[in-house]
Image (tube, rainbow, N blue to C red; front, side, top):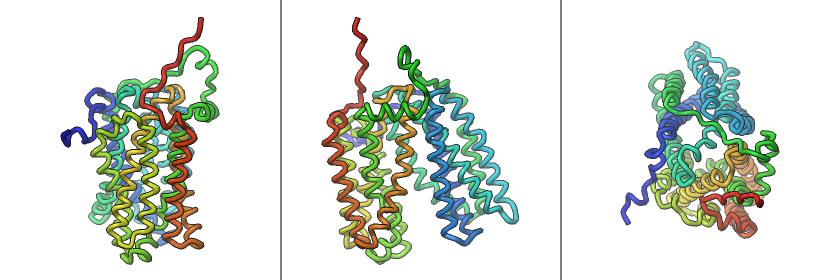
Length: 420
C-alpha cells in the first residue's frame, strides 16, 4: 500500500467541474474571511484597549452566524443554491468595502466594526447551508466524504495561514490591507461562480412535496425520525460541549506548563496541526466501510486525548494529545458530513445542515462556559479531565443507544416503492 493511497482523495475535483470552481471560490472567501477576522480583533483592541470589547465582538459574531444559518437553511431548500450564494455575496462585498473605507479613516469608527461583525457573520451563515447542501448533487453520494475532506483541508490551511498572513500584513501596512485582500477574495469567488451551473434543490414529489412547509419544524421532525442523522448531531455535541476547553488554554499554558504566551500559542495551534495532517492523509478514511463505527471511535479518542492533556506533566506531551484531538475531530467531521448529507433528502438538506452547524457553533461556547465553571471547584486539570471522561461516556451511550448510526454506511437506503 503506497503513501498515495492515504493522501486526500481529489476525485471530487476531477469528476465535477462545478465543484472544482465552487472549491476555488470558497478558498478565496475563506482566506479573506480569516484575514478579516484577525484584522477586526486587532483593530477593535487597538481602538478600545479592552479585552471585554473583543469578547463582546466575538459573541456578537456568534449570534449573527447562528441566525444566518437557521434562515439560510430554509432558503437553501426553497431556491436555487447558486443564486443564494451570489445574492448573499453582494451585500457581503459591500461590507468588505465598507470595512476597507473605515480603516482608511484617520479615526476608524468602533461602533461600525461591531455592526460589521454582525452583518458579516450573518451573511456568511446565510450562505453556508446552500454551499454544503449542493455538494452531493455535484459530486455524487460516493464522493461526499472525499469532498468534505478536501473542504476540511482547505479550512485548516486557511485557518492557520490566514491569521499568520494577517499578522504580517498588519505589521507591514495596517488593517486596511487585510480588508483589501478580503475584497479580492470576493472577486475570486465571483469569477469562479461564473463557471458554476444552476444548483436547484430537489423538492421531492407527490406527498413529500405537498406536505413540506419549508420550515425548520420539518427538519426537526426528520432528525427525530432518522436515527443516523440524529446520531450525527448527538455525537458532535459530546466533544464540543464536554471536551473543548479552549477558554482554559491561557491558564493551562501558565499554571500547568509554565510557558507563558509562547506555550499558549502552541496550545492554540496544536489541534489545527493535527487536523491538517489528518485531512492530508484522509484517503483511506473517506472509504471506510463502517463510517458510523469510525465516527464513534474518533469522537471517543477526542475525549481520551483531553484526559491525556489534563494529566500531561510536560508541554510537549500536552501538544501531542491536542494534535491527536484535532486529527480525531477531522476524521469524525469528514465522515459525519458524509453521513448527514447522504442520509438527508435533498429537499431537507439545507435545513438539516443549518441545525447541525448551528449546534456546532453554540456547543463550543457552552463547553467553554462549563469548563470555566468547573475549573473553580475541580481545579484546572480536574475540569479538563472531567470533560474528557464525560465526552467518552456520552459517545459510548450514543453509540450503544443508536445501532442504526453504529451500523450506518455512506449509501443511504433507497425508499421502497409503494405497494399496488
